[in-house]
Length: 389
Image 1 (tube, one colour):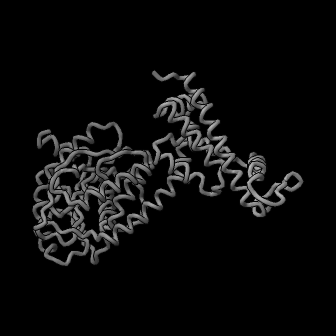
Image 2 (cartoon, rainbow, N blue to C red):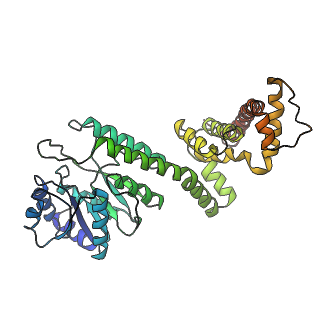
Image 3 (cartoon, one colour):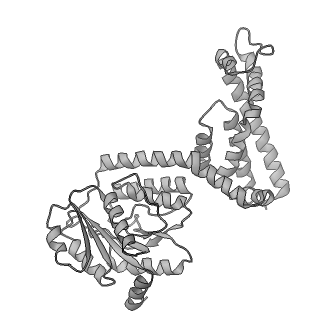
């Protein structure tokens, strides 16, 4: 795209450039001047800087500058900028860090990618973290973040930590719970949960130790990010995955759902059979309260079909619980000493408490046997229905 085409697209799409800054006096002016080559629609959030940042910003009276009296974190600065952008009538905001690692001449990359899409999208710059010159701790942190983003959304990205992004302002959540670096993880996960596509676009990156000032605190911020991911994973397992499963089921006929989401889903017949076997094993094992967490986690770990495993884990629905308890106690009886006869006793959790070892042993025998049987039957059924070459 030519410069004029980029400038016209920025105006037509109502895109602004949002620059959060905190004590980046060495690089701030260069970043602003670079962005001005493409647009004057710039919002700068001075997040309580204590260096010469105010003096630098005073040289640009034509730009929108928001000065926060106290540094409260990048997340808070971005939220402040988003509010101002929407108040100004912007539909999209491209965020660029002021520490000099991002090149303003990559703005056309975001604009062109947006123009190619038929729907709103959230774009994240891919910095190619495997190239020479990238700090190892940054590369590791990015891989760590990529894995959890995939676990929480099902979307595979090469870079989830880059601050160079394009946000669809009217599609992102309105309220957030994190104020600092972890905000950039929260917003992309929760936006993806809203079924907004999230994609990478290739960008350049510069790590100059003589200029760059990083405010990332390894221990504190990594701890905050880990806590956030724990919360997001929990929400994914207990709400997002069941919600998506139910929504997909509602949108399709039962036959179409089975055909598209189960039989034609990713994985070989063997993988699908193992998924069913895993679900049955977890569903019948004595992991009360943790069955969904375990079955999804193990499905991800062993690259199995999460939908099939989740469905199969519901073998322990309430109507079947008495039968499962009775079968488990019966199968475990030969392995314990004493009076283990349960035929003349009421089947309840008090019975399990009094015969806990018997129940645990029997439940694992039952779950192992039925998971093997269900896996074999599933494999034979799928092989007949959809033979693999």
